[in-house]
Amino acid sequence: MPELPEVETVRTGLEPLLSGREISAISCHRTGLRYPFPDFSTLTGQRITTVSRRSKYLLFELDGTQTLVWHLGMTGQFHLLSAEDEKAKHEHVRIDLLGGESLRYRDARRFGYAGLLDSLTLLSHPWFASLGPEPLSPSFTTEHLLAICHGRKAPIKTVIMDASVVVGVGNIYAAESLFRAGIHPARAAGNISKKRLARLTFTIKQVLTEAIAAGGSTISDFVKADGKPGYFTHSFQVYGRENSACFHCGKAIKRITQSGRSSFYCPGCQR
DNA sequence: AAATGAACCTGTTTGC
DNA sequence: TGCAAACAGGTTCATT
Image 1 (tube, rainbow, N blue to C red):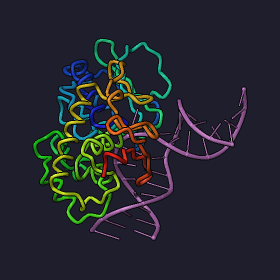
Image 2: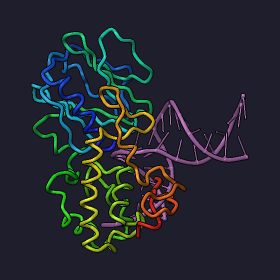
Image 3: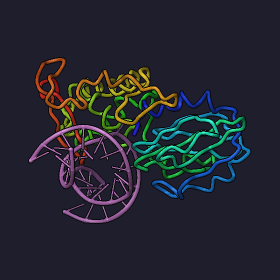
């Protein structure tokens, strides 16, 4: 999926297209994706007020009492088409808008999911209740990361990818922020100085900010709401660069597996 | 309690 | 060229 910058890019693309629009019909071509779909029928006649985001969840806020919550999983995409357009391969849901446009959800791997939640109690829902701070908010601080890491033997990469620690840091941006901080992904979290954790806190914010500004990264199937690719891929220092020379020190980038996922790092720059 | 691995599913890339 | 294995951005659940 999209990591946080990609979801944010989708959100900024959809927001001006959808805010204020009334839903005329909604239908799905299967009963659910990762989880069964909620009963969408109550959406008909409601207006989308805003499109916001928490963690990697898109929040379509409605003028009634509910919010349509959507997670893109690994390969979820939204496209705004016209009502007459044919159903594309892997299209699972269509949300028709008054005026003839039609928002389509496609998801090849079907890891995405949707829910229709009461807006007032949304943040108490299990999807949100135990989430950590937004990485770009003031509440994500060095002190927070320091407290989390204290005494922990888990590798630092696993810790920063844990959504209860900080949300939105996926496999790509974990690798890139650890490179910029000069920290080896397998280093035990409890064995990193405060100064270096402060650096990591900064580089997480820096990498995500730059990636959002670039419109996210494009890997195989991520496209923005307008169908154009993001450009952050060109900025990768380590991700996907196994055996290539580090741009900084020239050593070959290495790849290891941590908790079943690939980690890329520079053995010269990261300790 | 904390850490690791498997599962969900399809498409693309890599290696023999 | 063809086929099989490995791998892919996330999250949750089960097992050490």
